[in-house]
Image (cartoon, rainbow, N blue to C red; front, side, top):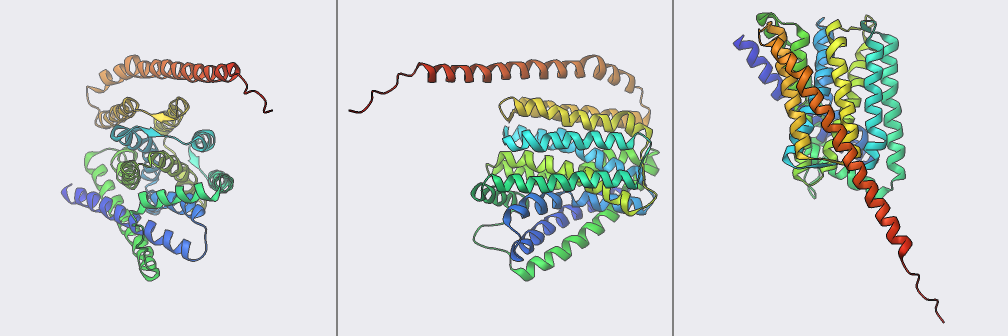
Length: 383
């Protein structure tokens, strides 16, 4: 157990270091070979933060641990929204761009629904993987097109913020080409090594504790592979780019579903089995967390501190439920009753009330603004 714990910790640290190196190297190389900074920000940076999930999922499938592979992706998406965004909002309230609300958030919800639909038969097969990967490709292409329409100036500023937040790059001191190549190779190697250590340790812990690989994937592995997103979001918030924290999470979740689950399902012909427990609880919760962002995003395009605190509290309750269920603890029944009959209804009512209030406030502001324009006295004509 001690050795497995060391493997897990070492794997997480190596995965974070590998993801950091990969972001630096890939961003620099892509820019040097003529790829526009806009495409680098929309594709390379968002994909690189999900590289740990991809490495762990592929390694888990190769080791015949499909539950760990699925739990890693679903758990990471839940952790990204409830834990990572929650912590980021507690540090500083998050702002959301209209493009994310009108396009990226609905795509994330749609991809979550698609994942549930293709999982209902208990397996993500070749055709399912193609559908998931196609959804990612369509989102990427449309994101690039929308970004270009926003204008080169705004796009470049957004990408620069993304690169700074993800890679902690310093302006005026660009990474040399040779160093970028080394970082790319080293980053890939560290991702492979970190994934192997993390999967080995996680499987060992699951065996020792007598719990399923799905539970370990949903908790320890999911949080570990979400650390790059946490680092990126916190850095973005501290640098004043609060909208980048939300964009990073939404893009990462879409990539997790489309590539991290879609590609292995295509590569490995036998597909990825989906446990009944994941279909009954974890996948619907992932969808619920995605949908929960919609009213928050539409109410002033801000995620307030209290909303972030609510997200973190829900994630703690979800993790506690998983642990109690895995260990068959006597407190499980009490926690379930509290969640079903008190916490979840309270959260639902709060979201409805706050959404209605904010919508009314914004509607009142628009009406007041229109009334002021109508009451303005036109200037006299020039003689």
